[in-house]
Image (cartoon, rainbow, N blue to C red; front, top):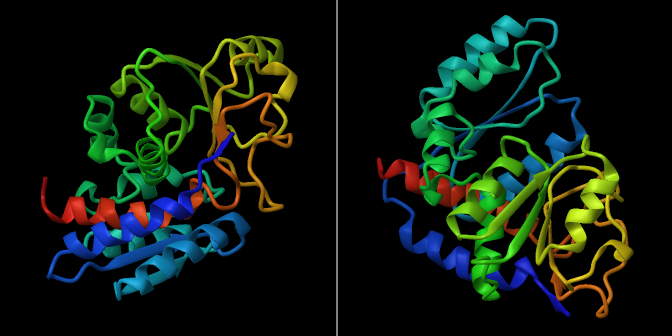
Amino acid sequence: MTILSGKDVRPLLIERIEREIPKKDLQFYLFSDREDSSAFYYLRGVKKALERFSIPYEEDFLDRTDVKASLRRFERKAKESQTILARPLAIDNEKAFLDAINPDHDPDMTTERNVGRMLLGDMDYLPATAQSVLLILRHYHIELKGKKCLVIGRSRTIGLPLYALVSHENGLIVQVHSRIDPASIKKEARESDVIFLASGKRGLLSKEDLARKPFIIDCGFQDDGKGDLGFVPEEETISGYTPVPGGVGVLTSYCLVMNAIHLSKGK
């Protein structure tokens, strides 16, 4: 059983960033709901990565008492800087914030233009988590071509990009989510060679649901600091897995920086 550690990949990614970072300064704008604990942990990692490369950033927060003023401020700042919108904002008009992001300043790759480019097969427009998954797969020489791949989750930033990634790598894709009948998910898992956990729900699968000794790529992060995998991996049941912490999440913030570098080149 192979532990697919993001920590082994991180030095290579850092080296690539240091080599490709543009001479002109990048600048980031980080926006979140102060009351969202998941946003706090997400942006904490982003800030550490930015500080490592001496990239300046401004942090801003949603004012729930005056959402319109927050949006006006967001629209102005999003025109100038690489923008990270920590979602969800738990407000009715979150889409207005998404629509205000300049596609050329969108390292999270959430704008409609960038999502469209990804779905048309340009993997340079993968959001950061999916980029992290791709780096791990390549580092450990895990081929998806001809393999049955199960993606559990359908979110705009993880599940959908993983679907695009598997398609690009010529894998056979089945995508399910937490609202699908659990028995159907378990059936697909028993027939899968690679399983991507990206639903935010723990315990959808047990080790008894695995028959092909799949690789498990855990993209989840729960409040207890663990991922979506609900059991202890064993040599008899899986070929390899990404630990949480220490797996996909280790690379995510650095992939945001890499995405920003790509966008700054005007491709």
